[in-house]
Image 1 (tube, rainbow, N blue to C red):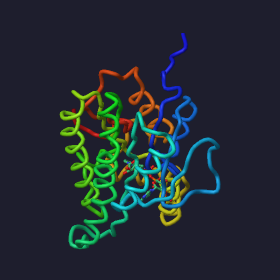
Image 2: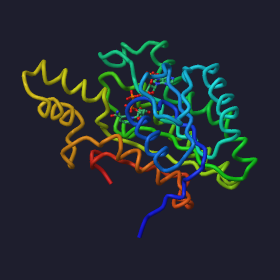
Image 3: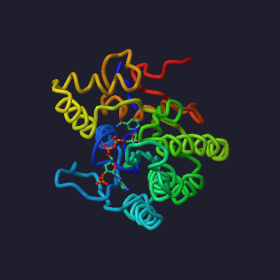
Length: 260
Ligand SMILES: NC(=O)c1ccc[n+]([C@@H]2O[C@H](COP(=O)([O-])OP(=O)(O)OC[C@H]3O[C@@H](n4cnc5c(N)ncnc54)[C@H](OP(=O)(O)O)[C@@H]3O)[C@@H](O)[C@H]2O)c1
């Protein structure tokens, strides 16, 4: 029997939808018949026809306002918000290298982007009595790595706590709130990182990937997660099929987290 996600004709905003996980989410939702608006700082040359791209920096309050306004203009409302934007640009070298500017940048990108986008769009979902918002966090929120990503991990932990609190408030009003927590995902940036590591260690791409996996304490599955696998999970979670799922977190990490 065909497993229909029942997403046809619904309206979605996906933040950070031109690369990596976000691009895979845009494709999965578009393939499922969703009307998708997405955002990145730069709109790429290669676009999916029918998907509406907005150039805006969602690490700023102004950028989030721009995105929310365009969502209402283009879709007339929204049924699902998938907050994918995030990442880290912090330097290596441990806590002493993380000055206030770095901390603020990590918090603005990984926490405040979702807080601001939700604050602008959730009232319309509450008014219509239905909707879902997804927060893409990271296994680093419970398995932090101290070399350069302490601030990133702390921002993701804050995002998860914010998400849980929000779910308690808005679920009774018809809006589901869900977290998705990936382990290492084989995005374009991850491929480039493994290639760089391979080159400096004098090994091949598989060897480069192994260096990253070893740094994580190993991945029982033996490989990173594919962006499309994260996107498939999110497509299910935003669908009516997942109508009873709210206030909880889904880890997708090939078994990386070593504890129960
Ligand atoms: N990759 C992993 O291994 C991994 C693991 C765990 C969790 N995650 C989480 O998964 C999410 C996606 O990560 P990813 O690795 O797939 O990302 P990615 O490949 O680095 O892509 C990031 C996307 O977000 C956009 N973007 C970045 N900064 C932005 C900003 N300030 N305003 C608007 N758009 C912005 C980028 O386009 P522009 O550059 O044009 O802005 C791009 O479309 C993030 O929340 C990340 O923390 C990733």
